[in-house]
Amino acid sequence: MNQQPLERSLLFQDREYVDIDLNFTKARSTDVARKKGENAIKQALKVLLLTGPAERLFHPEVASGVRSLLFDLVTPTTAYELQTTIEEVINNFEPRVNLVNVDVSANPDEAAYDVSVEFSIVNQPSGSVQLNLFLERLR
Image 1 (cartoon, rainbow, N blue to C red):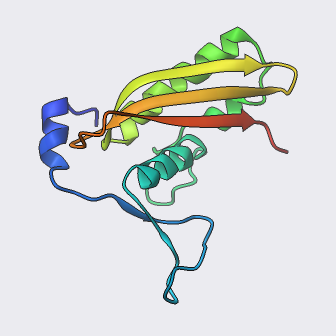
Image 2 (image 1 turned 135 degrees about the vertical axis):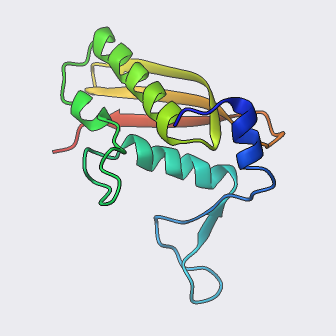
């Protein structure tokens, strides 16, 4: 599913990306609020990274394995594994973005990781977009 940049640009030409707001806030009408553009893609990336194996009913292959890595010891080695896992998941399952950089730093005092994902949106001249996440294990 990893497509070349030219194929991606032709595939997503002249599209506006829209998604529902997962906070389920109410819009002006009686409808649920929507997220548009880069905010919709940021939300989709966050959901994708936190998706576990077999959580998507008709697409069990879509999973990241990030949550399972959060229960390992907080070390630079685990941070590197987390970084490569995030890069692989985004490249395989999110065709609307071109990944620029993923930076993961271990935070052993809080048993968590600071994750910074830099990407560009296909067919958007806005340049690179930054997504910052604080990943910690939850029981």
